[in-house]
Image 1 (tube, helix red, strand yellow):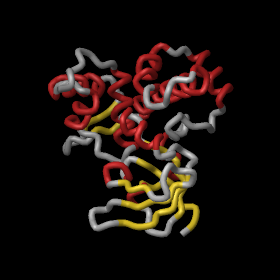
Image 2 (cartoon, rainbow, N blue to C red):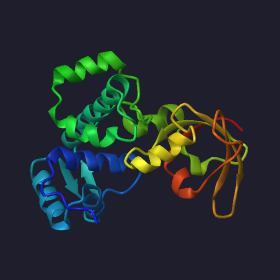
Image 3 (cartoon, rainbow, N blue to C red):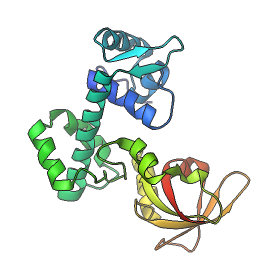
Amino acid sequence: MRREKTSVSREDYLKAIWEIVQEEQVPISARLAEELRVTPPAVTAALKRMARDGYLRVARDGRIHLSRKGRGVAEHLVLRHRLAEKLLTDVIGVDWSKVHEEAERLEHGMSEEVVELLLKRFGADSTCPHGVPLQGGHARLRRKKSAIRLADAAVGDTVEILRVYEKDPQFLDFVAGLKLRPGARARIQNREYDETMTLAITGGPAPRTFLGKPATSRIWVRRISS
């Protein structure tokens, strides 16, 4: 059973709301409580405070809308998080399945000077180890590269992996073993009734790889050809 957090910063709340929207889900208090592992009453109290301070508003249907002020705070924290991930993997050598939790601890203490230096070091147009652009988030992948979930690709498509879900270390170890990191290519050979896909992964460990819907819905790709 997961332990409830005793306190979560305003930045963490705003970042979680922003990320829920990026994943094309509806940001409501129940989903926020699940994401942050806090109690529903704690979320309700936090949302009231942030609405009072101009960071967001909660609509009548319960949907949470970030203000420009709240979105700015969230986006900057996300940037610090991804820069921390990039630093940990590219410079220190931490495995990509471990950097998300490590970056959660580093993101709040990163100074503006360090942010600027890391952006200069890695390039503002680069991505985190899991394929998300440092700036612009997943929405930028959809806009610039027409990213779709692997689950939505068609039989016969050849695709390039753009991004994989980063918050599950076991999943990251799994896709790494299949050579499905960002930049990899695969051809979709078949789709079963239960939506299991058969893929031929370029440079993969086997001629054919089978992925179920829980995996294909956590991988984003762009079509190269069909």
